[in-house]
Length: 334
Image (cartoon, rainbow, N blue to C red; front, side, top):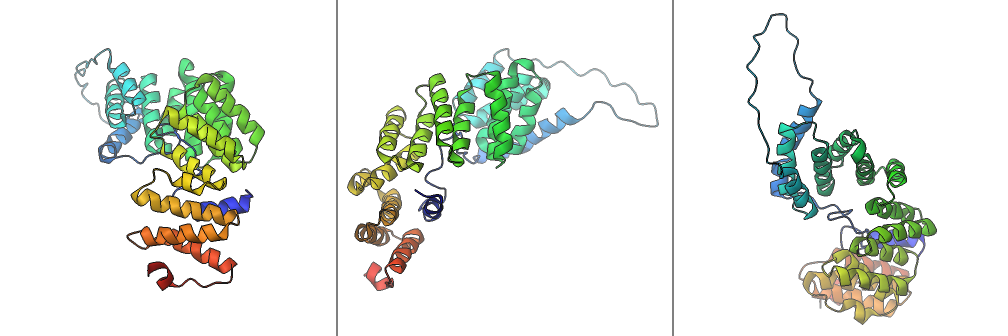
């Protein structure tokens, strides 16, 4: 598919986010927005960051009485392990609270800074994540992982070249960082450097052979290259590992549609998902110059939608314009 056709394809997608978006760490690189519980504690995290930046003491013109020493607060010895476990289990609100509590008592705890940075990254807060990754990088034993996180946060902040530099430093320091290799693969995909992308994904899989995320990204890369059968095989593997992987399933439907297997692409789709898939299949059919099927699927999407479904309407208008026809509303709704 040409770059122009791909841009048009993404612009006409039924889903607001492009279907070919790559699979994110959970959240990866597809960053989920924070829920209510997470949002309610963002101010607390900001306060912690502010605390870390303030120097102790103040300047006055008068002698101040020396305050009594603050009582020592001890933390359970396993709290950091519990916080990291919550992070690994994608329980971000719980992890956020635990890391913040640790830093309120131990503001120089580098592991807690790194963990909280990962939470901020997962929730989509790239600015806060970058601040914490930079602070965590001051600990020599955490520097490589902090560089990896910094690179991912920069990609999230739409600073791909700076992100590439940080990720390259990270894998040079520690070649086992599969998330960094995976993100480098995405970087090369975005520039159509297919060979470099493949090498990075292979290195990511070598470190994490059962990563549904990496397989999803490989499948998306193959789809972008027009290697639809290979994309189907790879995305099927991703779904075998993680059946709930929505990105892989959507891209698998596209891979099937690109092979002209429209009926297979619709299997299992119901309700709102079916309407979106009908639109996707219809637009892929346009790109395949299969205009009769394109019109049929786009018309069906409009008829089955309980409300006016603008993406399918726009795609049908585009199709009719290329054929010198006019779209009549009664034709669709009748």
